[in-house]
Length: 216
Image (cartoon, rainbow, N blue to C red):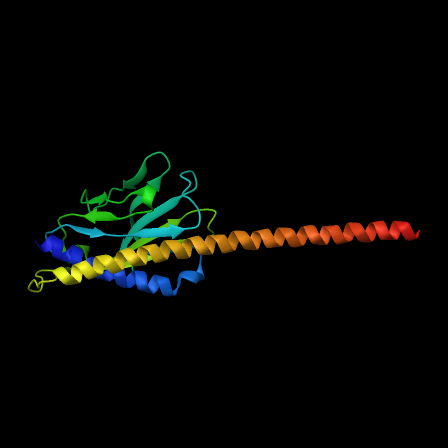
């Protein structure tokens, strides 16, 4: 089926995105993982994935997330899905998409993916996944280029490639989780060291004060 072929290609692209994210993992406390480019067959259904990692557990009262669309980088962004505290992920009324966009992720797993059904040629463009998860100060941003095609290349026997891709993807997921944990531990350790230094400094000041009183 064409849909499964798309999923396999998206999986390979996601693995590439994971590799890039690993090389940049030390740059911030939040990372957004997306495929940079996805090909979708006209008239089919495509899943546009967006997953984020953070040192902090999601707080539904502070969490914020938006999906936007723009034809090109120079065009205005159109908001078509957002997060509400009491309603979760909600598709917004859109002349472009109608009711063809649905939430396909899992907030408990930091998965913000969406599904676009009955893909049209006019759906081609840039899809932006914006994430804010306080107390992280940095807003996460994933950019996906959706390409809509009228026909797909002939299918190839990719059983081995899919198996290898799945194994590599699983290993990368474990590495990412480990790196996030290490990063969080380092942050907490740094905070502890700062607190200890402050306590030592206060101790020195108190000792100096006692010494001065003794000399008077």
